[in-house]
Length: 278
Image 1 (cartoon, rainbow, N blue to C red):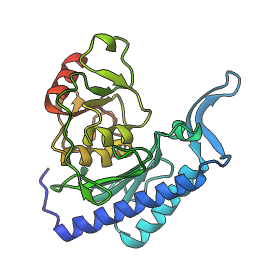
Image 2 (image 1 turned 180 degrees about the horizontal axis):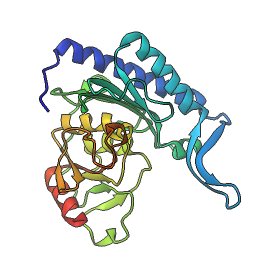
Image 3 (image 1 turned 90 degrees about the vertical axis):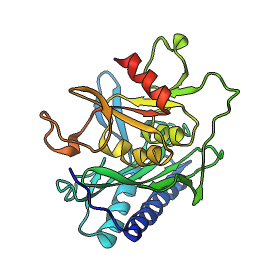
Image 4 (image 1 turned 60 degrees about the vertical axis):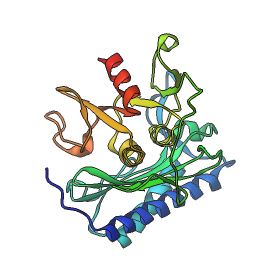
């Protein structure tokens, strides 16, 4: 697929909007802390008390607010979110991918690793990302953001992550890894793909992998990782390849249902991770 260049002023406007929307969601999240929240579950079995995929009232309120803002600012753009039906997202010209709270299980339990993620796709390619994180390299909440071709920023300031060369064993974001004691990293599982994308981009994690993420989980984070000069790889039918777009597949002809494994991180670490995964 060919890409027409997007004027810098349009990219800048979308990045500013993404930052504003991530900040709006972050404010809603912070204002709700300490309150008893209404929580439902997308899947579960009452008899066995097994519940998965929690959704709080804040998730739904944040996404509704974001959708209202986008309807005013970019009425022709599609919206793909976790909590509500997509709006015009079958078109792949411009689509906003929104996860109002990534890491909801952490959030409803008061575990302070969660994020609000806003990404923009142009013809299924991530071009803008803004992620409000409850924790950051600066030891405070804030927004990591970037646009295609631009630098990685945190709260408006360009950051250039540099690892400490004295640290010989770095950290890796992993959904599961039983034999990590023999691997080249110490493993961390945060419960939030958006947090791990941000932490890889900021240099806190050397590498991370995701087994079957949704588009809204990683769209904004991919932009951050690329802005930091790092690699993004996906595994399709033919094995690991460099990520470029959210491509439809034979089993999922609609790109909205894309769910492929991803590896993100420093080149050497990403290569090691992919080799271990096979």
